[in-house]
Length: 454
Image (cartoon, rainbow, N blue to C red; front, side):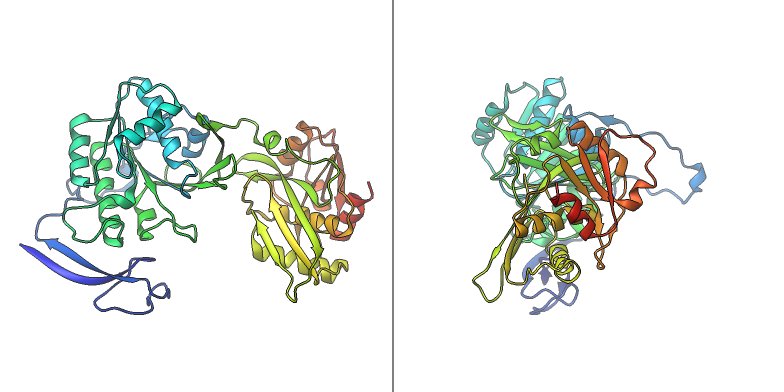
């Protein structure tokens, strides 16, 4: 027996209401409730992929190390924790044109070339369009199968028939279930299709990659429950107009979420970057005011990035503040510290901050570099080009210690830098002897004197 029910579903959080509301009572967003017709059939649940078993002691549960299948792309294997786990569901999100389909097509090519059958479901593009893109990436292997389909039940039949090593769904937002009358991409369709494909992956022990769209705010389109359903969530960072791409894991049930993969977009697809620090600093201008290099930690990898600042007198009543790659609220805090504690008159200045290469830095170790870059541009005095800066800045303009200082300093030393301005408290815990000169500072004023006098 089939039942049709009309409900209003919030496109942001998935909240359901029997009537339309201007504001979602769950997530407090306005005008996000969309009318949908839900079809319900009185039949057993199809998401049960194993018979029910009685409770047992956790000590009696047998364990074994998860078998992983390498993707033959080292940067991707690093993020996944060593390879693809059988039966896992991996969601890859990012801006349009940033490289989501490209990297999964490269993974498909490499696995298919190693005599493994791969099923690529191209729901957004025709088969001919996908082949043209695959041709640019290299020779197409025989074991790479492709189908243009949006019906998840037909896709499940193809998976059962061909038994591929992996499945790629491009993309989850255009998938549809015949059991629902709502349009593809709606909250109910995305949730239903993701749950169905997850059940297929777990029951068949075949890993499935899902490509997901993102909203203009940078979040994955569809209900938030989509990220909870899958095992791993990967985000592409960077701007599609630049060549650098960073693939970051924000959720991983089978590995760490602290790792990143660095790629460069070329005509032949995404190429792994083995030495990202050297590549990011390759075009750095010599003796440029407002340019500072800072060693950051992304996962377990030290990464040297260039922070640029431009401070110029403003003709506006409210000076402009713009930043790329760093948190805007953190920049506002550092500007206030420079005005109140250091004495720089920045209230009438336009300030622009940029992290070169489209890299996004979240850790507070970049604070001192941003402060020195602003001061350097304001005073029109360059920071020593052979120096790196490292430290967190407090509200009293004190420079605080950062984590993992030794690996950061070793990376700067490896790339030929001669001086490192670092919090004095970090010097107490260092056990390694470095060739690079370490300059301990306690306040931002001390750091300015050390950086701008050279």
